[in-house]
Image (cartoon, rainbow, N blue to C red; front, side, top):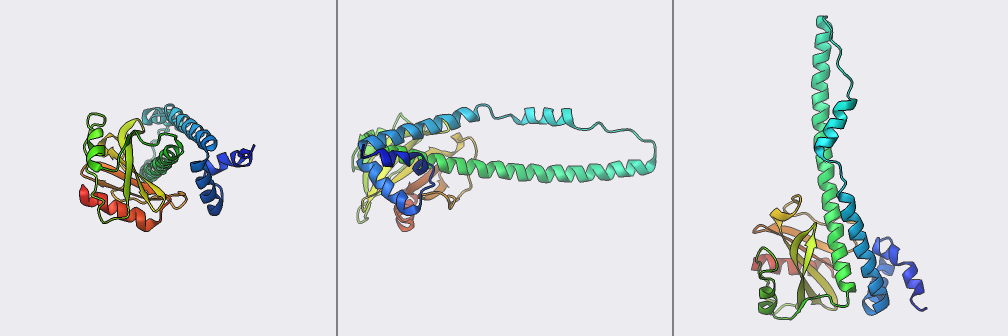
Length: 254
């Protein structure tokens, strides 16, 4: 079949391991090929299910503490003053080490969480574009799209006025990030599709930085920020200037 050569590289494409030129060529093909887009959507959804299932069995902090206590060496008593000073010094050193380790571990967890969120946002963007029905409410009118979300998500948000801009609204749909409901808007600019995700920040499992940019390894340009208790993500294959312009329109409207 004509698409067999494409499908052989589909997993590599979804993992973002193709060269940049091939990625853009593959992206254009997926948008125009119903068979490949359906296959891509299935694999992206499977990937998200596996990630979600894996997080269910993450050891809790209490479980880690009990294991560390069970394997920690038991302190031996000594009547000598010298040993007492040595033990005190060792305790101080251990506390400092544990504090440093805890801070480093927490920082590592925060970084891992941000990377996972960015990856899931990219997956949602790709899956939507690959879907045969990318939006649930089809309209270029913000006054039609915004009311559609009322009663479907636990927050309200504003959509920007696009007059005198190069952007056009295609529609919107409901979406979920870590089982948190949110809004997904799709915009078009010069044949590039841009996704805008909006979530209630306090409902997310952990907080992101106030204004943190996506990792360089992400295949799409993205901007994210927190405003009015909501977390916004703007992502797409359009240029950084277009992503920034759409983000500024949302910031001005909020």
